[in-house]
Image (cartoon, rainbow, N blue to C red; front, side):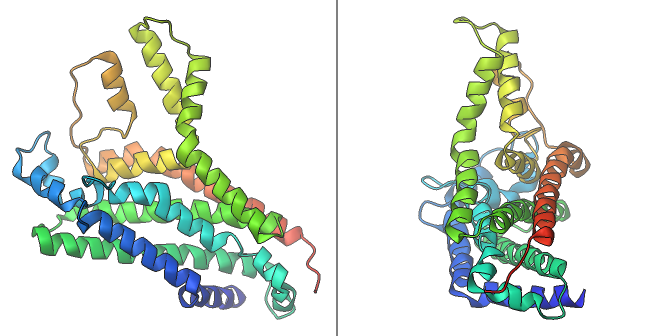
Length: 324
């Protein structure tokens, strides 16, 4: 345990003292703030929403508009967190966690000290997760303070609880990308190879997964030229199921349900509503109902993260480390 904490403190200091860590932190902070209060940010649209009549009881969560409302030219803070900021931060923190030490020759010298091998990988992973948590904490607190001062909206106790759950979910999501990058860092010695592998998977899930899901749906549930309602529902259901193989989709659904309680689900019910032509409209979920809705998403992301780290751990523990 002492060896793991030694590695942890050393890695944590490196993350925040290095230029890479400083640039990452500043980038996350500036992008988040600009998406909220920039010239084309969300504040003007939030003011417009607050002035219009509230529908479906969503007005009781007005403070959460800060995180879910898009600007005229910029997506919302939640969109940036889901698609770019958290995945990129996790990948950058983990892409050279192991192979960087190998290439510099410091890993063999580190293991020559009274530090167990598992303490190295555990300490590095823990330091990356804590770094992601600190970045998210700072960003969420600053955006909340800006919203409170500019809009004069104070969060309710339930909104605070939802933000805390979103914070924890985002850390778990970041841990997935950190675990993915560390997996390639263990398997590939060149840092460029591990970076390309991690970024390639991120790009596929972020930009091409929707096309792959539509292609899968059209193959497994083809529709005629004049599709009937059952055909359309089956095609949409297959498309949603296929898209949920992406951790980006899973986190996007879970975070949307947390921060936009008016959505009964993030995607499925809305698409089924349009497909079936029903007149049913979603209402705000209670916090308990929200947890029941998102727990499969969180369990899946957590399971994938544990699997990636377990593979990295086993590979690292069995690998031969030679001095250079």
